[in-house]
Length: 558
Image (cartoon, rainbow, N blue to C red; front, side, top):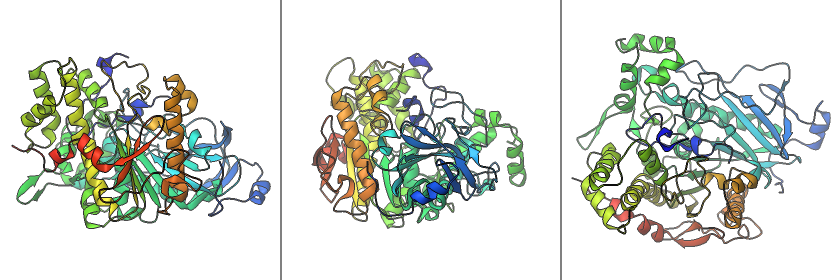
């Protein structure tokens, strides 16, 4: 694949979160509490890999030392309608190595193409030994446009440490999030996630998972989903801990319809996403009463062709009455322990994509134009001042424009919003902050060679948690990276086991994951900088100053 073929659908605003592209080939002990199945249950089953759910029996396989159940249908949904649980089946379903269909998405480097709307499947991975294990539910990223819970993610490293892992699909793009008042609560993808979490609550005990100890975790759009579920009243009681990886972007989200704040008009999702999408279809002239009917007659291909390059959940709906940031600021959210963090060079991936789109980051004029376009989402910003300030911080090298553009994307889009959400969270729930800092991380872009160092780019931390040692090694990981991956997997699973105890959190009962103790975040406290091979606790102020967060609070405006 050449650089110029990276981005088939070019985003123009909001976040282009392309995690599904980045991890193409997938990247012990047990607890005594909870509702797992017993040895007697296993003996009574006609097959030790057969489990009974509310929807019927499934027969799994053993794969890489895990009991694996791929392609379990957790929901069905009419187009542009809330999902429902499927009817029960009477004959046991024998599963295989195959995953359920991806939800509809365009053919791209970011996820396998699909036009199959019957796509609400999840996958369960459990240790071979019976027990009552904590549960970790992974929500994939991909700009809410791309990806799936399937082959891109290998949970073997986590399962080996004594947890049950669930990955899931949810509806994407216009079919999952098209905001328009004619469609009611259009956050269908978030509704899918909640139905999957309800399935976990009802059934995971049969897979030796503890339904009273569920951690949701996700990266980028998946991290934004985790934050949205924290803010959603409908998710109350469906999870008990949360891990947010690079998910703090666009925390103010957008309302369903146009609004105003202090007299300033705020375009809603219907204006930004819904109406342009519908205008590109044969339903453009339908009145509101007939619009839903018309949209349901369109082919999947036509909807995918018309939809925007990325999309967001919208507020002012039953699923999301208020935005993530408003929920955190008012305390009106599901208060559970949280791990939250971001990467040192988040913007590097998007700089690579910008170059693939033809952006000129080799001249002053090209750089200024690229920064102006990047920041166009917020017309208040003084793009020229921001561009000049960041360029002045760079050394005079051929990569100065690239490095400045990357730093703006990192600080403005991800890390300073992360910094602000840390401050909102730490006074209300037990919070642990991280800063992924391995700038020698393996290149997870497979066959794409970047013309500049990617460092600790957006999504590069996923492979340290959801891939095997073999995959990391094939991508070029050395001993330092493999050591850090072990530490991170141990922290993540310790949090799933002990995160409800602030004295333990992600550190475990026998020391701090054989690395260092991860301090709980307090005002002016410390976060964990994930260096390779050994993490180190540092002052949060180091993160804030490195990413120029004082410059963004408030930001330079015209």
